[in-house]
Length: 257
Length: 257
Image 1: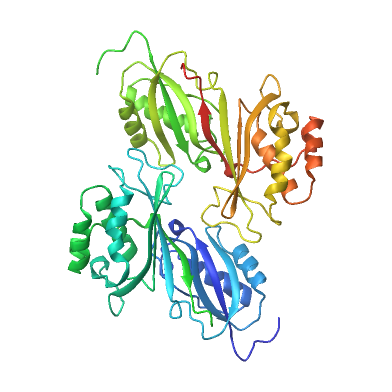
Image 2 (image 1 turned 90 degrees about the vertical axis):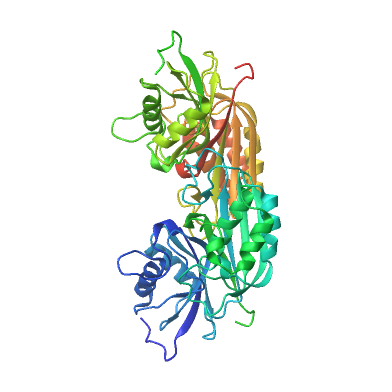
């Protein structure tokens, strides 16, 4: 092994995981997390403790196909070696998709300028999904009217106070967020909601989805959705959608980093 | 409960299941099967033992989104009751998608005129899939050339002797099958092979896929694929593709039934 460097090297990882296998991203005492298993693999590869910081700390059950994280290492390793070794050392429920060397100015969380989530809804009326039971939310009861949901959701685009969709325990300094993308796409029997913003409040996507489903099932009007949003009061919004339909799909950074 | 009927009523079920949760369709002594769990649910609903016969007995690990099965009951139940009750009584890894009353001339296996399978290949070079690890075959090593595979596979269309792709232990009376559909579709990072025929030999789709992957990875030419096919000798073909990429998606019957 070569001698340690005088300055650390920073690496950026793109990570996919099955949220059902973990108690979320962040390290916990008595429950397996994504951070813990990846840090363990990196420690074995680099021979020293590694702290891995991510762009968006996902909750228990929430998946990722494009989580981004960074860490500092005191030994140089090629990106290909990092990908191969960490995947070989980690459970099959997590995969490092890519590794790149980045400047020490790069911070997975604080440098991120845009985050995108996918929420998968399945609205078979009577029947749950045997194959995707841990990958979608099977909305019970009525068929979802995508057009009604689109009309209601359009009001979220742009810069607003999202307090109506902010869960208790949210640690953000303020509730203002800028939604840059909100799409609802039919994908066979599924309805996919894609939501992109500079940043998200705690449970924001799941609270938006839970409320939009009220509209899609015909219980609430698009006008009521807008009233809820403008009330800035979480108690007026719908229930929080369950975690297994949610995927962190993309995080963007300034090109200079 | 109403008195039993003098003649049984035949019902047809469409079934989805996660093959990874079962030792295949067919009842076995020491291993959980799809047939066993569904027969158990039906017995609880109808109050008498039920035998469930399927169109295509899938192996351990093989999934279905459109398996068809039939059974005879001595109590009338509405299709909606059957769907709801059996799903409520069964594990979440199996779902009855639909139930219909059919003539006693209908036989899930012997009346079927067409079966269709999907095989999902994922050819990320270095990285396995954390989310779809039990849903696709992550082909190792090289990228798949779909066009080469299409050219080679085209030779399978029509009526031929499929002995080259017939596994030992196949109980079919003869090896002649008529392939009516063979398509290879790019779906993001995945390659989907769709194969439809009047019927299939044992492991036929998985043996075709394993051999086509040799072509797609550039090891074998399309000419060699054709030679293997025409040799009628299983020993010349490629390895059997693993079960978790395979889905029984559709079974068709004469309209008169």
